[in-house]
Structures are given as C-alpha cells and as structure tokens.
Length: 434
Image (cartoon, rainbow, N blue to C red; front, side, top):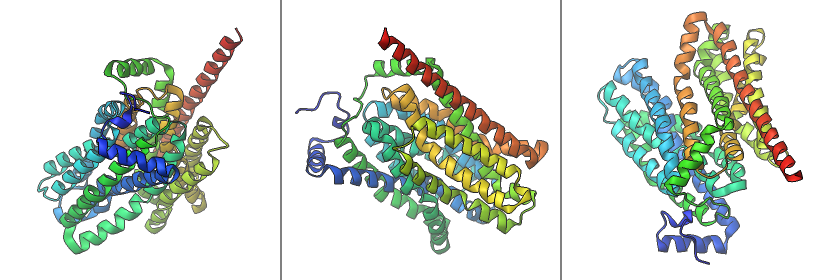
C-alpha cells in the first residue's frame, strides 16, 4: 500500500532510507520497536549528560579555575533553560509538521557544536551566551520534544515508550558526574567539554536519528503531519479550553516546587540541624528514587489510569514537603522526604505528555506541548531564585511550607482537571442516550 501524502514517515526519510527501515520493521516488528526505544533512550542519556548535567558536573571546576562568581556561572544554566522554554512552541510546530526526527538529531548535533565552543569561553558574558545557544539545542532534543514526538508516533503506547526511555535516561547524571570529573582531571575542563561534544555529536545524535526513524517506520497510530492552518486551529481550540490552563498550572507548580527544594536541599537540611555529610547523603537518594518511581509506574501501567497516577504523584510531592517540615525530629523523615519527592517527581515528567494527549488530543500535539512547556520550564528556571528570595524573607522555615503550598496548588488544579474530565464523559453519555 502506498503511503498517504500526509504520512509523517515520508518526511525526513530518503526513499532508500525509508525502504530499509520499512523492510526492517516488516521483517522483525517486535525487535525493531525495541531497538527504536533503546536507541532513543540511549541518545537521550547522552544528550542529557552532555547538554544539561555537564553544567553541574563542572561548576566547581569552573569556579576554581576561572575565578568567576558562582552567580555569574549559574546565569549560564538559567539562560539555557529560559531560552529552551521560549523556543519550545517553535519546536512543537516543527514536530507537528512531521520533522520530529530532524529536530531531535540536528538539535543534538547543534548542541554538541555549542558545547565544543564553550571550551573556548574566556569571559562570563561569552559563557552565558553560549549556554543560551545550548538552550536552543535543549528545546530541540531533550525530553519535551522527544516526548512530543513519541506521543505523536506511538499513540496509546506512548506512556509505555516514554517510561522506558526515562528509565534508561535516568542514568544520565550518574554517567555525567564521574566521567566529567575524570576527563577534567586528565584533560582539563576544556578537554572534558570537547570529549562530551564528540560523544553527543557522533553517538547521541545518530542514535536519536535512527531510533526516531525506526519508531516512525513502525508507527501504526501516528498522527499525520498537519498543515499550518489545521495546526493553528487545533492549538487555538486547546488554548481556549479550561483543561489547557489547568494542565499548565498543575505541572508548572510541580516544576516550581521541585526546583525550589532540590536546588536548596543541602543548605536547607544543614540549617535544620544536619551535618554536611548527612545532608549530602539525604540529597543523593532523590535521583535513584526517581528511577524507582518510574519502575513502579511501568509495573502499574495496566492497573491505573494516567490521571489517577498523576493525582497520586502530586499528592506524593505534597506529602514529601510535610516530611521535610518535620525532618528536624528525625533523619528518617529527611530520608522519607528524599524518597517520596524523588519517586513522585520521577513519574511526573512521564505523565505530563500523556495527560496532555488524553485531554487535548494528539492533533497539533507538538505545538500544544510546546506552549505548555514554556511555563513549566520557566518555573523550573526561576525556582532557585524564588527559593533564595523566600529564604531571605523568612529562612528555610518559610521555604518548606511555601513549597508545600505550591504542591497543594498543583493538586487543586489536577483535581479540577479530573472533575472536568468526568463532566465531559457525563455529557457524552447523556448525548448517546438522547
């Protein structure tokens, strides 16, 4: 059967390349699907390690060797995340047009070039500007565009695919930190960045390119690429509805909560009365528990709906804030905070695109997800500053309840979303009876 003119698989695949991928999928569909998911997951691991976690991994080295202030250096990551937020709607439109495969691979390649250029930065201004360029790459190849691409191509299987991708990519930080330290020790920080850039360019980008191609070639529920007018109409219809704004408020609140607490967790625990070593040990639990939360999500995917899991995860974040508020009583409660916060927030990034598709559909999904990513990423970018401002006003005794209140705002928004969904189902049922 000939592919339709609007088939997204037609875009970005040469006749020869498309034929090879199609034949591979037709011969071994099961193996090809798993290979596609593994390639995307491995590619995401490498681009996250290079284009995001390299900042934290090398921050102390930069501070010591360059002599720049911590505030000047951290402006680099803030610039990257804010630029990524602003560029997300454009990335969404590119995905809707059927060029998601191009976006992921070229974004990784462009990010690798910027990462290599970062090794030549000789002033804070140049450092910040290059991180802003890396932010453009992040908007093209990290989770938000990747999950939008998967949602458009995988349909009802999207949650399963996204969960598996994040399970592997959850190891990006454990890979980035020791490898960056080793490379910086042997080659200097400039050499470390150059090696990371080479890995992203020659391993990460090709993995995303071929993995996305295989996923497209095997897609049975893919949404056809929309024309600009159809895309704009669907996007405007989504923005006019309450579910869009409830999703935006709910998930942005979670980003703000997590960004405040995780960026301030060590000084917060020290101020509470824990030693530096104990605070670091507690903080180190968050990352592994994110992976544990994703494993739990994978095991429960047949028993619980996405919205029920979202309410459960949001409630977990609020409960974590309560544990942290009582952490001065016992270190056990501090560990309970880290475990609960990590596990709950670990599944939120997976559930965000799934809930969005459930309530707003998959037509113009890239654009819709891109606009929803803007406040989500912006809140994550400003979270450290908001936490510092709250600390200046009332210390961490104010920061923790404020973060808990933000989590409750997210729970309220997602609860209203659930109510809106029930009303919509009720109206549909009444219309059927009529």
